[in-house]
Image (cartoon, rainbow, N blue to C red; front, side):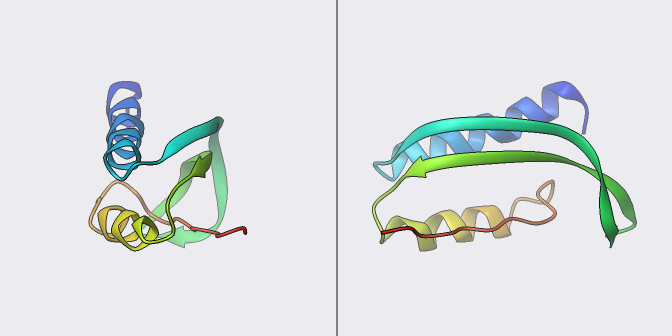
Amino acid sequence: LDENAFNGVIEKVRGWIGEAGGSIDKIDIWGRRRMAYHIRKQREGQYVLLNVSLPPAATTELDRYLRFQESVLRYMITVVN
């Protein structure tokens, strides 16, 4: 993705988290890195780490949003109590 599209995806995720009643504690943009293996014929990706406070029921909704976002190749949602 170019810089504008990349920032647009981050803003969409911020919006989804805000709509679900959550808050973003920290955004850590790691930048473009080489992936361990090809995903959809892509060798590099832009990595972003989000530390988020979110109601437990909203994680399934966030999962659904991210699954249908074409520009997101992989994601992981980890719940910490």
